[in-house]
Length: 312
Picture 1 (cartoon, rainbow, N blue to C red):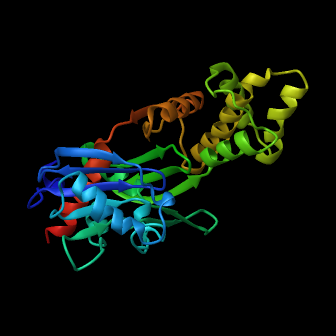
Picture 2 (cartoon, rainbow, N blue to C red):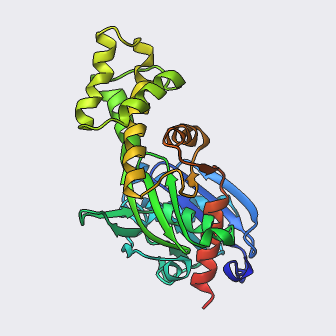
């Protein structure tokens, strides 16, 4: 891995700054963590221009990183954050993306933003990501074997990302809004419910319904009709809805990326509670799965992009 993990000239500040959360670390030149903190300032909670102030007045002092160079990934690179950085078209690898780092200002310690990526969906529509590209490139950097051949990654979340890797390059990706649909439907529609979505049997029944052919908008109404028709207790409805949405998503994405039992494992990168349900859904399709739920991928991604982008 030595050819893929150069040392930085000194310690630096690294941050994964998303819509809801901000996590920041001080990394040593070899990528090890000196210090790290979570801050309550996702960019969606900030006013225009406030992110830059937060970086200088709160994040840097909070980690004693006032004079360190910085690299930031995520929605901080959108119009909601410090600067709207242009998307970079796929395919990309760590080295080519590092060459597109956006320097925020020529004043004070250098701060760089990782650009998001743009790809074309099968029908020609654009698809975009910000933040996930850093985690994926870090995941690749952690193991040389991952940079050989074809791999598919799934990053569950509000907007789930399915990403195709070819020989260490991000070739293309597809976004599924299953997480946001689940939140909206279970809180603000006729399918709303306050029950926890942790009933495995109801989730599995939803998976089976999600894999069926037909319009998703029609199949969603079954969440309500099964309850009012007496076929399902109301306290199972939210778990069934979760299964239906994830079942529809995984079946469609498996087809879109040509996945079958002979494919290599799908890599799940995300929070353990989300990966659990996606692993269950993919297992029903006969697909092998490997999971990585820690911070190592995003830290490795920030490290490799900083080193490749600043040591030239």
